View (cartoon, helix red, strand yellow):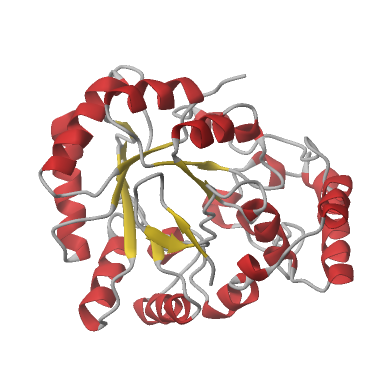
Length: 327
């Protein structure tokens, strides 16, 4: 496994992280044994960077990682998040007292007194980002976190936060079917020495094999709300994805591994975090950092999936309500 630095002064981590959202059951029924096996497989493949959040399964994903840490000697770099309020009152809360309390809950579930990276999961425009950055600085000085990050934000928020307290990482959706970060956010992170962490780099399963196809699979309650899988958009998207599968086969790669290799080639400060609860699925893409793509192969990918090819938005209006928009 190749390695990259988490920001200009952060720890060294595997070039791929593991997104642990599905341990909480959002994408279908799971169990602790399956999740623990996936974590073991990730470690065996050299993945040392785990990404989780307090709301993933209402704490379930963090608890699974805590159980794994307690029964192994492994010491990965862990990132968790707070700021989204789940349940009937779902929304965003950036109040410093709330964030501090949520961090304490995360530390208890993880069985530790420190996490390497603590994200603001969403920014509430009613709370100045400088106020949030000030809290993060306090938490760093107290030794509770190693650094802090921001998720689903725009370049202007990154610059404002970084001026108050240097940001370690930004986590936004980025893949061959979601490329908005190229319109300023990737560049801002590179200029400031901030790591960029692409989530959903495998397009919510659309780059898997077999491809997550709503014509053949039950998408579940979350992905069924994503417009790109809806009947008015999927027929336009499916031919592009099938063409990408053919290209991957021609190049001798699993389509998920090729999609991740493309992502890694977009900058040394990118550390994608594909998510899975399946050790078998993880094995299909874990060696993506070893893939070197030539200029001709990168061009073939861009020809097959040109910028803007995806039909439909990546979120519906309710999902997108707390996402910062720009450009």
